Structure formats: C-alpha cells, structure tokens
Length: 515
Ligand code: AMP
Image 1 (spheres, rainbow, N blue to C red):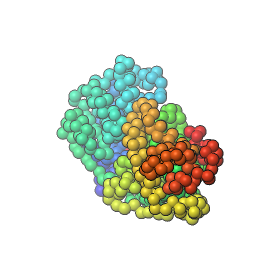
Image 2 (cartoon, protein in one colour):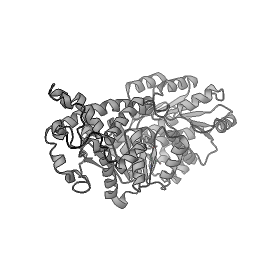
Image 3 (cartoon, protein in one colour):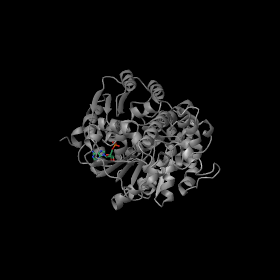
Image 4 (tube, rainbow, N blue to C red):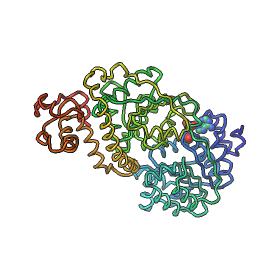
C-alpha cells in the first residue's frame, strides 16, 4: 500500500496530514498527487467522500511552498459550485497548510466585498471561490487572474447542473494558458468532456470506484409505503418519517433528511419541529447567514436533524452523520449516491433509509440499476400501528379495484410535470431566486387537495367520471361528492353532506397552510 511519505509531499504538509490522523492516502489521493506534483494536469473522476479535496489541496500547498503572493494576483484558484463547498475547501486548506505561511481568501456570496477586497489587496496564495462571486470581483477591477499558476475546478458536474459552465470557461480564459489545471467531477457528461478537452492538456486521468459500490459501511433500506388515500400522502409520509426516526432510537444520533423540493424541505422541517424534534431546514432560498448557522450547529452536534435539498447538501462534509433519510426517492439516481454518501464517511458506520411511495418506484428501479444491487425492503413502522388505513375500514376497503387505478393515473401524471420543473429550478437554486411560480402552483394544488376535498371532487366531476357517463348525470355535475372518494357513484353521495358544510381542519393542515 502507498504511504503519504512516498507521494513527494512537503514535510510540513506530511506533518499536518499526520496530525489529521490519516494513515494512508485514499485511492484518489494516491493517484492524483504524484502527477499533480510533477506539474501535470489532472482529471479526477471521483465523488465527494473519497478524499478528493486533499488530493488537490495537498499538492497545491507543496507546489506553492516556494514563491510569494503578490497584491491582487492570487497564485492559485479553486472553484467550487456552492458556498458551503467553497467553505469546506477553505477549511481543508487551513488544516493542511497550518504549518506553512501560505494565505488564502474565500470569495463567496453573502460575505461583504469590503472584507474580501482587503484580503485580495494584501495578496493571497490561494483564492477559493464560487464562480459568480469570483467574476463579480473581477468585474469590479479588484482582481487579476494573470498570476494563477494552478487552477482547480471541483465538482464540475455540479457546476454543469447549476449552469456555471459558461462562467468556468470564461474564468479559464482569464487565467494564463500555462497554468496547471486540476479538474474533478463525479461523472463525465458530454459537456464536461468538451470542457476538459478544451482546457486541459494531456491530463493524468484518475478514476475511483463509485462510492455506492465501495461504501460497505452504509446499511441501506427502503420502506415502501402506500398512503391510505392520495390526498393524505403528505401527512402520512411525515408521520412515517417520525415513526422511522423513533424506531432507530438512540442509534440515530443525527441525520440529514433529504427532500426533492425546497417547499417540502420547509414543510418537513416545520412539521418535525412542531412534533418536538430538533430540526432545521437548509436549501438554496435561505439566506447565507442562516445556512451557515444551521450547518455549523449541525456540524457541532447542536442540531440533530438537518432537512436538506440536494443542491444545498451535496458535497457537504459532516464527518459524523449516523443516518440519512430520503423522504423522497431522488428522481436522478446519482443523487441517491450523493445523498447516502453523507453518512458512513471515512469508514464510519452509517444507515440510509428511503421512503418510497408507488409513484417513485420507477426512480428506485433506476437507482438499483445504478448501484447494481437490490436495496433491501423493510417493514413500515406504521403497519398495524398509527397507520389509520385499518381504522377507516369500510371506507378504504370499499375503494375496491377501480379506485387505486384512477389514483395511480392521476399521481403519475401530476408529479412528473412538477418534477421536471423542480429539477430545472433546483439546478439554478444557488444562483437565483426560485422562479418556479408554476411549480408553486402545483404545490398549492396538492395542499388544496388536503384542505378541500369537495373542491377537488368538483373538479373531477367536471372533467372526469360524470362526463364519461355521458349526458345522464349532467345535472349532478356541480354537486359536491363528499367524503367517500371518486369511485362512488355521485347519486349515492348526494344526500350525505350539504355542499356548504366545511371539512374539519386538522392540526396538520394548519401547519401546512402556514408554509
Ligand atoms: P472529501 O472527499 O474530500 O470530501 O473527503 C471526505 C472525508 O475523508 C473528509 O472528512 C476527510 O477529512 C477524510 N479524509 C480525507 N483523506 C483521508 C485519508 N487519507 N484517510 C482518512 N480520511 C480521509
């Protein structure tokens, strides 16, 4: 096995690595450090959790050991897609460069320009930045990139997802042609390939195994769950989540709970808090100081549950996360790998539990294809317990064969449209405010669903079952069909409840409407 000492790193770096407690380099470190130290370009295909940050920070510190920083002309540049990732790289730099005199500046949004300008004016060896903020500084004339000898692009596939590739290309063009480039991406999409072909010169290519196949330390399980009624799914899922957390008991020291939508992140966090769980949300629409505070307290063990979107949490290095809960199955299989990679880090034990409703089964299949194994199914803790399907008895059972069919039809049509929009919006979430008015419309619809069944049934009455019966029922079309679901012939239900009688408002609906 290779040792750190064999890699050719500066003794001060080796000493800092040993202080950090690392005994041997990880595969990406063993593969990337030697060519980087030779001054070659490196293309690292590796995900977060593999030790890739040290694989570029350690050689960078060694190479910069000689020479001095000049005012406004950083000697090296690290680009990361999100503020949190940039801050994480900066922390890594502090750890490994603590025995050197090298300086750094972190350029991220949400921090005052003044402070950052002062550092740049003094001269820094390493500039760590998000692409947008770096270009802002450049355009204000405060920064020269012509002194950059080493440029790192971290999480390039994430940059692509977030629409940063044009910015990256521009930054490449602002740095000297002779620079050394260290480029990292978890996957090689065609667009990433094009960028590397354009800006890297005969790179040493190091590819390390997918974390999902490598991380044996993560215990994975899926809880398949069918709601008692489509319009109760959201409420019951939150109940299921609480039951899962409770079932894990003391073993669940802390957890990241992933949701597919930012609105859901807020709802789940709020709901958990209401039920007495120590939870806080993190997603791209929250302001930076709040995100930083939340993340800090989670890292320090003061916050037990972090409810997160993919964009906010991807690449975060929180060393001791006991559990990951996927409140939603991610619609992109690769996100699953990233999500569960938040736990079981650096050889620790971890557990990843995924809730899967019928609509999400196709995504689960895609994940199992990607990780090349079947994820074990475990029972829902709600079975026979607080799952109120049993209690409604006749009501639920009478739905018979035809009702689930129709429910399925609706559930697969609506979320798919929304999901595509969510995908697009989430991709740009770190850069711009949520532009998904449409999606909110969709979310609102699903809440309306929970609040007012009669309204919903009116809608179905106009477009669905009643119309299919031809002209016979036309007279009932605007009558409310209340309380029994749309499988019931409307005439049986007409006398049950007068149109004007309101549905009782539950505690949960109040909670949601506050969202
Ligand atoms: P990264 O992929 O850079 O996010 O690193 C994932 C985690 O692995 C971080 O918590 C690092 O501190 C840790 N790590 C990095 N290199 C090593 C190593 N050689 N041995 C053990 N842990 C490491």
